Length: 379
Image (cartoon, rainbow, N blue to C red; front, top):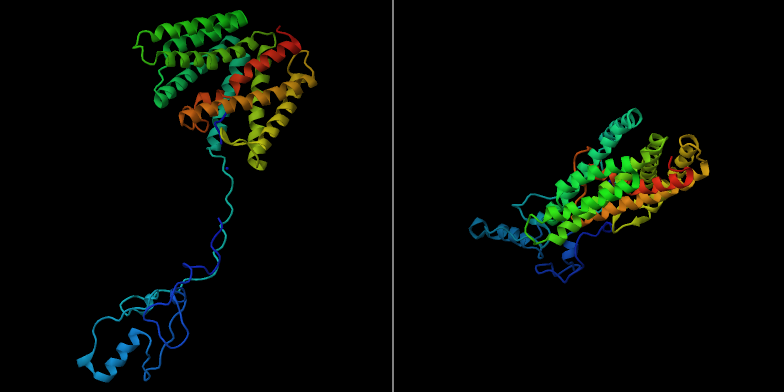
């Protein structure tokens, strides 16, 4: 899932470079000063009748009083180094304050996405899924097939845009939809046969183009066929059981609860990175939240939704879902990092694309299907 994804100021009083040597034009009498002091100290005013002998400005004033206008030097006096206030043609500038700057206010953590849009889209998708799931099973199979085709389109489009890999979409889309239907009608055997035929179709379809990049393109095509439609076929296979809609609902609930627990706990308490090179936003605390939430939800679902299910089976199921969902999310993060993108698409506001919602669901589907078959059978 998405994907979903957060110096020491200078010491007070330090305003310049280290102390340097004496400045030319400094008064010979009196304490020695340097460039650093000149930047911090405003010269003392001198008495009008006693000419000073240190600064150029005071010498000019003395010459004017002794010789009159005929000997007046009209050249603007040079300002002492580092103090523009001595230049009569320059506006007076305030001395820099040596008070320490206040520390910036801590910023609130951001979710990184439009949370309102994400919730709205999630609720809408959930309503469509639940309605199709409990009304007519075949309608839900159609929903799976549509999601698979859109996901394949997003994946192949990003591969071509970012890597120049041209995985053939037409045989993938047709084979992917056929794979889902075959899994629902003929079970695992039908899914494997459809997967093999889809891979063969990818190999043949790519032969209509020049041979350059053939191996690269067909390899990406076979990977896409396995990653999206084949894994999604296990959802259709869950649906064939007598309590199929409740099995699929359990699968969806546990995956969503796992992602929600990881997000909530990681956002609030996350400090230790889980896999910083792959997904910097994921934390070990978030993984703990995913496991805790999923195990609790699994116990409830197995006890009250699955025929002949037991709460302790739900604990195992929840733990497995949290692990597979996390690995699936990390796997798609690896793909997106390799492609240099944040999201696979923009179809779902606040979520990204369809593939950004399927990243946790796809690898979790075979895990849930297998454990439910082991716990309560396939009927």
